[in-house]
Image (cartoon, rainbow, N blue to C red):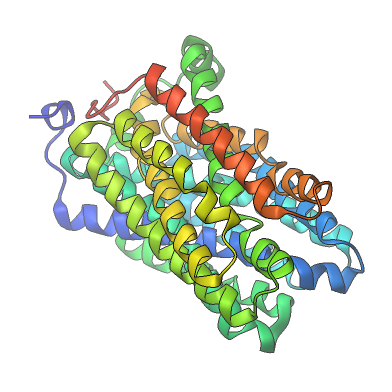
Length: 408
């Protein structure tokens, strides 16, 4: 019997399914809204008469503001409950996505993407804590992979939207369509209960978050460094890949870019679920280390192939590895988290790591500009370095597989 099951009754399976569905859709639709931007770099730049590198700063702003959202919404979720704050969070990021479609200037566009970043920053931590505190312990590995598969699933949806709608609605229409996730709050409000762990925690005296973080300072520093590497791993392999690497560097058609993006997002979903499930068998650190290590020999195929077929194959395999490693992160961070601040800690260290990696798109674009616009070379350097860093962090890092989620 796991520690979780030894402290609390076995969760209701029907309730657990509803929570998993809500959390998966929340992260999917959040990622859908985020990835709309990377398909529209060139169009936005043309509208506001600037270079692509200038528009990539919007990604930097979004990622840089996410720690604020993680801390703000996480603290509110620890105080007032996971469920209501998840609903507020989804409405907020949907609103700013809608407003982006009406941005009258580049300055307004940047401000709205920064505000979107605050709203986006809260969703992951709240959704993952609500899920991990509700589901049976034996589900944690594969559900972690499923939740993180919501990220490439959102990318997949953004790719479909780009492929079907962009020629007709333009970049503004894509952002307006991106407000659709707001309807998810209706499902959460009618079907998703509050976390049983939070209900017990709410009866106990509250501890200031600063006090908890000081008590767990080495863990906090380790987790932030880990998530910085992970966000370079993810964004370094994705943000410039479709519109800039495939479009600008290789001059592929709209249809070819869409097809390749759909293919590698299928790989990402397979990897997330597969390695998440594997982590329940062999442990979190080993599963992550294997996925990150396997990315290294794939770099030449992924970044330096010349034909659509080979690039598509390389991207498919690379995203199995990248999102395979990521598939273990929701459960790994929630198991490592101090119990008093579980809605805050995973999301905050994740998004603070995101902040430290937020310069990725601009860094890669600047590097490529200095090397004959070779975006493949820029991406290869980033992925090669961070894959090694992740493997090293897994060798020396902590693990808390199947730890009790209860607030004892």
